Image (cartoon, rainbow, N blue to C red; front, side):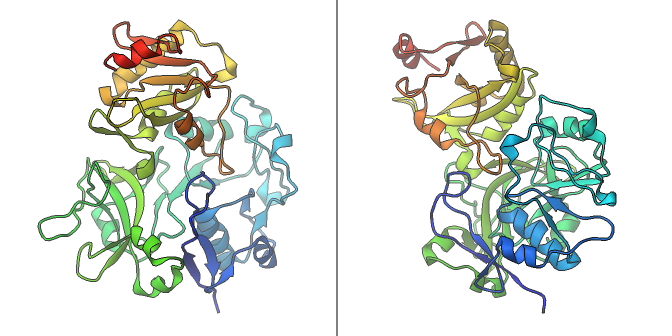
Length: 411
């Protein structure tokens, strides 16, 4: 009998990104997925073998490894003994068809002839930032990149099989009618303050239209309710009831998406990452994506920080520069010009923090919790800080000597 996949809500412990823990994936009802189980169903492949680097987490485990093993009875895992920290060459699986495999660590600052020495046809993953999509595909000569969006506890998801940079799938009237794997998935309007779904006069959720941003929700089939464990009140926080009809139930992903005129979906932000400033919602990923297109910026991590006496949170962008180059007046002016041209006034970072490197999770996501807590506390922050200077159209140094004057001004 083919194993069933269940979703189980975990206890509120810290997860891979420092927030509340994600759910544990199980086979049947209470049997956890372990490396031993995966190794037990491992099979060699005669032609092409899917190859994954460990560790693997949450939705990726469910969407690729478990399902591919069930369907194809084959899987390849890089063992735990493989030390990524000690490898400096580019990451890739070399020559699948000859059954010769090598794993390397991608380093954006290092290129070699080995980058294109492979028979890889498709790269699958959770998503590349749009600003590095084309660079990655060109450098490694990947014919096709397929990406997906989902959550372990979710009952549906989306796929970008269109080789379209930055999108996570399509939500046309046809795909909406068919659902994801037969499960209805919708984008609904949300309250900009509470981020809860907005309701019409009849108390029902409201679908968005092309050109709008919405909250993703997916139906929970009745037979799946037995797979959600843990305190009932925790589950109820993620479930929307009576969304479109009496008695229905939908899983709230807590993620915001933009739907363009051709029905392509673009991830905007997680509800918890969005902050309000000047009475508007600021998408941290949108700001980070804009900043990351600047040629001298290696990575950007955007978040909101509290300013005494101000409502909401002011934007702060933590930045790393390519090859540890020094901060110059030209760089500061370049950041200002980029934000002025591509971001609304309220979304432009008020503060800039230049760092040598970021703390990342095991899935290579930038951690924000520590940065948010530190804010611009000069007792904790030793990195160079700058504050926006609209009069001079640049960013100027921000330190303990001018902090009182700056914070009293109209930022």
